[in-house]
Amino acid sequence: MTTAIQVTWICVVVCRNVQELNLQFCPVSEVFVFPDCLFASKLLTSLNLFLGLDDSCQMTATLPNHISLPVLRTLHLKTLNFSSSVNFLDKLFLGRPALETLILVGSQFKSLNISSLQLKNLEIEMCSATEGFLLVVSAPNLIKFLLCDFMFTDCSLGNLFALEIAKLQMDVTYRSNQSCLIPQIVDGDGYHMIKCLNGLYNINSLTVSAPFLQLMFEVVELPTLYRTLAKRRIDTGEYCDNFHNLEDVKIYYCICDMAISELPTELENWPTPFSKLRYLHVETWLSRGSFRAIAFLLLNSPNIEGLDLDVDPTEVSSSNLAEDGGVECSLKFKLYHLKLVEFHYVTGSAAELQYLNILSEKAVTLKKVSIFTSKVRTRPKRRELDIPKEVLSLPRASSDVTIHLCK
Image 1: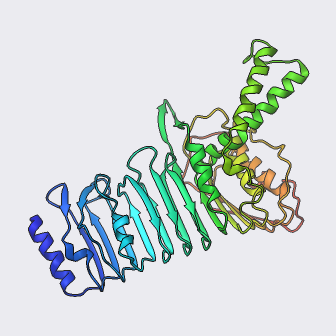
Image 2 (image 1 turned 120 degrees about the horizontal axis):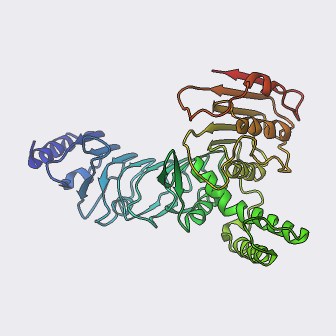
């Protein structure tokens, strides 16, 4: 089918005054010029544009100078490339649509500036064209926000007064090293993610990915932890193989102190940013860093009631990944509202058991723990424990808790 025929079909459909339009086709050329009539419909309420045969096929879209879709409520764009043209959304919002749902998947933009009073649902998946990609969202009536992209995305979230559900499926690039992957974290990634979290203060449900947790730890907790260890060695006059003498330890202490002083300003007023948060869902590596990041979120979410943990099977290499028995157990906090815990994809490792041990000791009002084992998400075999026996013998802060083992 030629481009002219494709354009003709679109014009015919629009002239029939359709209200919901789903366009999925593969243009003949790499650049497709949309007809003006498609973006001047007075009756179109839902528009789904998917150019290409699959997600790997991305087409460059050329748009009219003026866009006016006054009653458009749902817009779904997939595999469109706007990185070389004037921002499509800028033109769209100038037309003052009644947009309530916006879904952007695999569509590249130079930047995204989303400002809307009516928008209620926003999903953005893999739309960053380059490192330093800027995402600005201002939507006072937004209820649900999903962001799935790389952590170099610079997020600026504001005026999200009605936001209830947020899902941050953020990832990094990896370098392969024999049997495992090494996360490639770039300077500034941590600042971007902390700034993103700071804009989600009103939510009651939060989902975050394993790389996001690890980065949180490295930005927020790691300098403080290392400084504490260095201070201990200075006080005791001892040093380990990593330092030649105590002067090296003192220098390292100063470096850690400097890192702490340069933490993002978004953390200055961090005491209880998630006072409305009731449900936390995390994908986690079995590492000290990941669990300390979870603890950081729990500490700053005083009214949390439900926690879901999904073990991420990705074999990664990190300086603080836990070997069996290596998860930090000395964290001093109590959870006074946590009632439900679900632990998914459990394989029976000692690190998983320590996660459960810490939670059962800290949650004084815990009612139910559900443990799900699965053969779907597996990792190379480690030393496995007798899950029923070990779990049932865990110390418990709550006398009312029941433990369910599920498959």
